[in-house]
Amino acid sequence: MATFSDNNGLKGQGSTNNTTNYQFTDDHVDIGATYYYRLSDVDYKGVRIDHAVISVVVSGKDQNAIPGSFSLERIYPNPFNPSTTVSFTVNEATDIAVNLFDLQGRLVNQLTHSTYNTGNHQVQWNGLSHTGRPAPSGVYLMQISNN
Image (cartoon, rainbow, N blue to C red; front, side, top):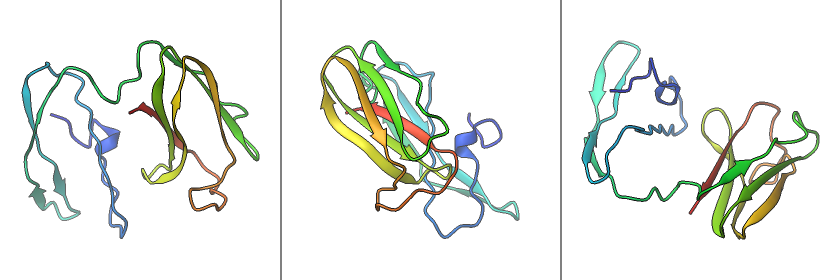
């Protein structure tokens, strides 16, 4: 069982007016098996709320897995000003999405969502958010996935 004390992705965000999304990846599953998960939250007074149980049947191929051999090169310059380059390599044609998130898990910008052929590729981020405004200074998380 995963808890907020041993999984940073499950730590509460405190009192906030913004939507908070939590994500948990179970790395120990068997294909064809059914797993049940429940999110429970505990408020500052210790009151626990158990949310609905969801079931997941594990199928064969992970749709978000990066195909075969995939490599992400060093992001440069880091720290950057005013832009930075993300270089990656894929070994077969695939749809790739590169998203940047702030530390609260909010989407800052989608750098690409395109089909890439086998080979080396580069995507640049100009430091702007998806609204076209300069993103604040800070640490960002990058998610690369294939669809």
